[in-house]
Image (cartoon, rainbow, N blue to C red; front, side):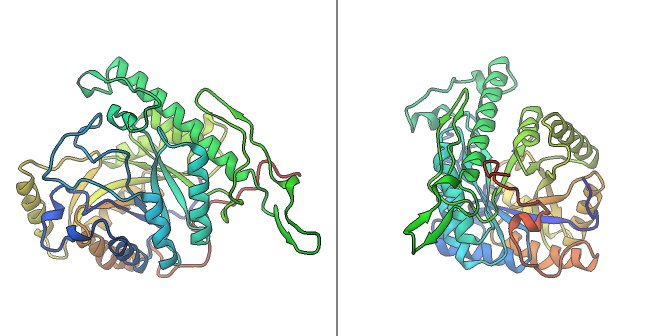
Length: 401
């Protein structure tokens, strides 16, 4: 995929008080504000001042848990979230350039509802919307809806035969959900809304299309009720750790968030995703591959490691993550990012361990360091999130040639 390897894309993953479970206890944390619009608006404003490409907003359909397959009943950790799509819509008018990519659990969310919600976010933000699709294997979340039962995987082991079968089923459903959402975004042609007062026609009915999707998981006729988004297709992202999610990325996504722990692993991940793109007939398309890192940043050497030790002590256990956990200075992190970029990664999603502290360190420390090295922008240019990521605006698949 042609690109300028010197120019990095940067995103921040926003979740509660930060990605370290004990972050809410820190003096600079704002636990009383976690469920307020102002808290999220402040984080978005900080990210935009740092010229970040986008922020993602975490979400789920059950309380946060240390277990992938069910609740853990802990009360000493942050529990509870605002709806990510609604939060993004609230902060969209308060930002001008920042991409907004909320998480949506497609296992229990109808693609018709998701398509119009994200299309609305794209309209509200002027073309800066995306969505991170996520699956849920938790039976307790399925019980909230009562439409299906998910099998309990013995011991919560997704690497067992039953776990692998469930994993593939959920990601197959996710691929269908993304396909339905994309078709619904295309179901209105760009010029379907004509607003012709003289003839009394607000829309051109010939430019609204049935999608007639019938698959193993969904049967959706369409069209959408929301006019085509400004981007045509808002950015679709997915977190991918292994072969099955890599396949979803290659088939359906514009952006992958991956979790390599070293440059060699990053290179292997990029290679697998490119292979899946080719297999899906998308070899000529731009699909970004970002690496996720949990970050603790301090300007003074050694301070970040001390803070991590203090947070771990409050947790009574060393913090473990699917992603690499980095504790150090902005300059040290810049070295790591530039080294990882040689593996073919196109950007990075940084997970601040402590909010707002580490987000401020990213935008106030890391970004200036990357700018000094000439590998990050010094200002925003006009355009949509797709424009910033170098993704072309696709034509509606239903438009006449």
